[in-house]
Each structure stands twice: as C-alpha cells, then as structure tokens.
View 1 (cartoon, rainbow, N blue to C red):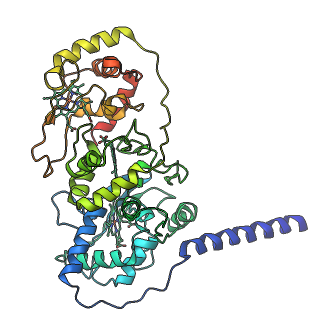
View 2: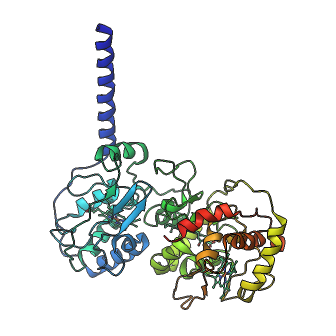
Length: 425
Ligand code: HEC
Ligand code: HEC
Ligand code: HEC
C-alpha cells in the first residue's frame, strides 16, 4: 500500500514537472505585450510592409480564391486536419483591428494570438520567428492600411488530440523555439541578407525541409527535400545539385529562375510555380541575388536515394513509341526541347531525379509555368490523364528516365496509382 502510494506520488510529481516544463518552454523569452498603438504609419513604412508581405507570401494563405485579400478563411490541409487562416485585415471585430504592434510581433515571433491562444504551425511562424521586430512592424503597418473586411475566422477542423491546446503546447516544446536572427560576421552582407530571407520570410524550409511523423521539421537535414504529405508534390533538395540545388548554375541563371520561373536549365511547376508567381518574382534583384548567394553556399549533401525497381525492357520500348506519338512534337525527338517555349527533357533533372512523383504529376495533369514579367505568356503542357492509361504513363516516364544517357530508375504503375489519387489536389 505504502509502495503504491509512493509510486503514485512519483508519477504525479513527474507529470506535474513535465507539464510545468512544457508550459515554461511555451512562454520562454516572451516579453509582456503592450497595447500601445502606433501613430499613423508613413507611406514609406506601408510600402516596405507591402514588399515584405510578398517576400513572406502572406496573401496566398490568407485569401480564399476569389475572396477579399487577407480576409482569411483558406483551409490549409495538413495530415492532422484542416487549419483555416485568419482574417488579417484591420476589422475590429473579426480581424487585427484591436491588435497592437506588440501583439502582432508576438504572433510572428512566438506563435501566440492576441488572446493568448497558441497558434498552429500551419502558420509558418517556425520560420517567421526569425523576422526582425522592425520588419514585423512594417508588415503590421501594411496590414493596417488594408480596407477592413468583416469576416469571422473559421473554426479549425482537426481531429483529437491535435485540436487541443495541450497537444499543441507539447508539439511546440518539441519543435519550436523563438529565434532572434543573428548575422554571421564571417559571411558576406549578401549571404546574411539571403539567409535572413530564405530562413525567415521566404519560409523555404516549410516545404523543402523533411518533417517527421508529428510534422516537426528535421533540424539535422535542413532544406534536404521532402514529399509534401497532403499535396504529394516532392519539394526537392536545395542542397543537392542533382535535385533543386542551384550551386552548379551561374548566379544570373539562378536569379532568373526565381524572378521569371524559367531559365536555361529548369522551369518551376506546381507549388513552386505559386511561390514564384506570388512571391519571388516581386523581389528586388538585390534580394534575389542575396538569396542565391546563400543557396549557392549551402553545403552540398546528396539526397537520399529512392529504392530502385527492376527494369522492364518491353515497357521502355512501348514508352519510346508513346513519346514519339505524344511528346516529341513539343519536346523534340532527342528531348532537346525548343528554347523559350518547351523545356528540354534530355539532361533535365526534373526527369532524372530519384523521386519520380513530380514527373508523373506533370504527365498526368500537365501544367503551366507561372506568368511573370520575364515570361509573360508561358506555354502550357497538356494533361495526359485521360489519353494515357496507367501502364502507358509508366512506360513513357520510364523511357524518359533511360533515354539520352539518363540512368534514373524506371517507374511502376504502383507509383502512378498513388499519384493519380493525389493529383486532384
Ligand atoms: C502557409 C500558409 C500561411 C502563410 C504563408 C502565412 N500564414 Fe498567417 N496563418 C496561417 C494560418 C493557417 C493561421 C491560423 C493559425 C491558427 O489559428 O492557429 C495563420 C495565422 C496568422 C496570424 C494570427 C492571427 C490571429 O487571429 O491569431 C497572423 C498575425 C498571421 N497569420 C500573419 C501572417 C503574416 C504576416 C504572413 C506573411 C509574412 C503570414 N501570416 C503567412 C497560414 C499562413
Ligand atoms: C509550398 C511549398 C514550397 C515552398 C514554400 C518553396 N518551394 Fe521550392 N519547390 C517546391 C516544389 C514542390 C518544387 C518542385 C517543383 C519544381 O521543380 O518546380 C520546388 C522546386 C524548387 C527549386 C527547383 C526548381 C527547378 O525546377 O529546378 C528551387 C531552386 C526552389 N524550389 C527554391 C525555393 C526557394 C528558394 C524557396 C523559398 C523562397 C522555396 N523554394 C519555397 C515547393 C516549395
Ligand atoms: C503542347 C506541347 C507539349 C506536349 C505535347 C508535351 N509537353 Fe511536356 N511540357 C510542355 C511545356 C510548355 C512544359 C513546361 C510547363 C510547366 O513547367 O508547367 C512541359 C513540361 C514537361 C515536363 C517538366 C519539365 C521540367 O523541367 O519541369 C515534363 C517531364 C514533360 N513536360 C514531359 C512530357 C511528356 C512525357 C509528354 C508526352 C506524354 C509531354 N511532356 C508532352 C509542353 C508539352
């Protein structure tokens, strides 16, 4: 009896200790918020905030298609359920009307709402925490300059236990730490600016860094690529020149990709086309060059190999026929493409990358590069989902991966079945 009581006491104290520790981790480094409202912002500060909002791509998540800008309500699908974005317009009842710059900073830096509620990391404050207070104030000034829209926030659609603040507090204790950006004096000013933008507002890690089963970013493998769990697009590794690394390109070509969506080597598609369209095309040449300086200096780390399937020779022959029939008119008999119109497929890493998901997606659903100032009327790639059966798509894709000296593994119909399911998203 005494022993049982003792055991219970130990258990209770350990639990209380853990709870206190998690609670402490969730408020560490937080300063008390103040309610001081700023004087009317200068036009310059508002313009600076508008620019930073592009760099952070705030509008994409905070606007429903066809709805008023920044009024929130867009559902962000996660493996744990749907998290709806908030109304960021200065409406007092439903938006940020009553927020002070200090409340706003706490949301960006600590991931906590005005009322003290912990925010879900579908809002990428795990990255935005690096944003400076000055930039946070500029963003705030910009958002306050928007017309107020009365639109109540939608309740999230999360299963248990994910919907509880306690579960979120534990998640944050494990994966989130507020960070003050610190420049590295050994690096150039451009590198530092680039690192600040890539790691902070650009939140490139939100897609390009692998996550574990609980959705936490794997700090040991920064920017090393991951399959986006819901969308099932592969965000390739930025540290591997055979995937999305830009260290093998000239700085000009890398800047061109972020500014226009295409360059001599590549064309952005899917979620990355959105990033270029809404965010990076609007950045100054100086900021894009800075981001490229940082990306080119990332330590090279080959992406993890994808298990290869045994090759199927007949399929490849069939694939070559299908290629001639359906693809060569645009991409060329030898996969040479047409400069300025159709990407070359020979030597293209979008074709040879270990992970074939994007390649399959492209053939099934087609797509467009983003329309940008430098590429105002992009050519489209037609979808083949209705024209080609699964085994035909597998054949043509496997052919591409072995043609013209390529040595990437073939693709099976199994890969396709999975990706047909994802493609409607
Ligand atoms: C990837 C999608 C995404 C992007 C990009 C994004 N947000 Fe959000 N944001 C969300 C979601 C989802 C929420 C709701 C989180 C919650 O309620 O727990 C949110 C919540 C917020 C909140 C808290 C509002 C409240 O009422 O508590 C603020 C402030 C905010 N975002 C500002 C921004 C700013 C500024 C940017 C750009 C620098 C930005 N967001 C970019 C998804 C995003
Ligand atoms: C919403 C998710 C998402 C975000 C955020 C994102 N990316 Fe991507 N990125 C992708 C996906 C998916 C691809 C693969 C499709 C493609 O190649 O265009 C990709 C591809 C790329 C490529 C290779 C393009 C090519 O075709 O060779 C580069 C370079 C890149 N991303 C850089 C960045 C940088 C820099 C940032 C931050 C400013 C960023 N990405 C943010 C999803 C994302
Ligand atoms: C009408 C012209 C046209 C036809 C036919 C066509 N494509 Fe494309 N393809 C394009 C264009 C334009 C793009 C660039 C669009 C984009 O990036 O969203 C593209 C992009 C691609 C990409 C991605 C390249 C990259 O760098 O990201 C692949 C892979 C591809 N096509 C394969 C095929 C295959 C396989 C076929 C035949 C089954 C085919 N295409 C038929 C025009 C075409």
